[in-house]
Image 1 (cartoon, helix red, strand yellow):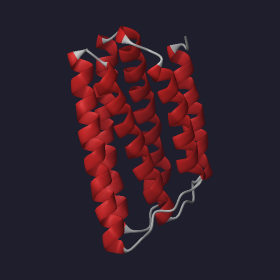
Image 2 (cartoon, rainbow, N blue to C red):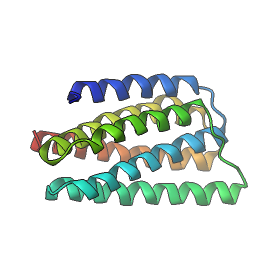
Image 3 (spheres, helix red, strand yellow):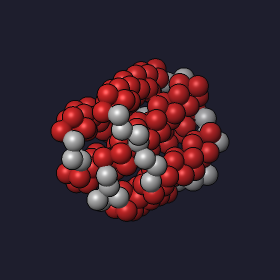
Image 4 (cartoon, rainbow, N blue to C red):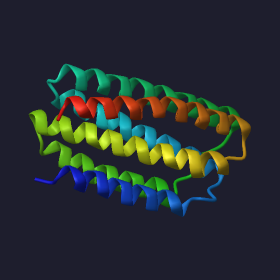
Length: 172
C-alpha cells in the first residue's frame, strides 16, 4: 500500500515541476491547464462518490464536483465567446498523467483508507493548483477576462483547500 506521504509528495513534485514548464504560457495554454485541473478534480470527486460511505467525504466530493464543473463551464463559455481554442501543453499533459497514477492508486483502496487518501490528495492538489494560479497562471494571463476567471477560481479553490485540510483532520 502506498503511504500518504508518497501520494502527497508525488503530486507536489510532479505538479510543481509541470507548472514550472509553462511559466510563460499563452492564454490558450493557460485556459487548457485550468480546464484540465478542474476536470481532474471532477473525476476524483466522482470516484469518491462511487467509493465512500463517509457522509462528510461524500458532501465534500459533491461540492468538488459541482464547483469545479461550474468553473469549467464558465471557462468554456469564455473561450467560446473569445473564439480561443485551448491549447494542450506539457503542463496539462503532466497533470493528466499524474492524475491517472493517483486515480489508479485510489481505486485500490476502500473504506477509511480510501477516504484518507482521497482527502489528503485533495489537500495536496489544491495546494499545488492554488500556488500555480497565484505565482504562474494569473500573472501570465494576458486577457483580462481570463485573468478575472482565474482569480475567482483561486478564491474558491483556497476555500476548497481549507475545507480539505479541515476534513483531513476528521478522517484520520
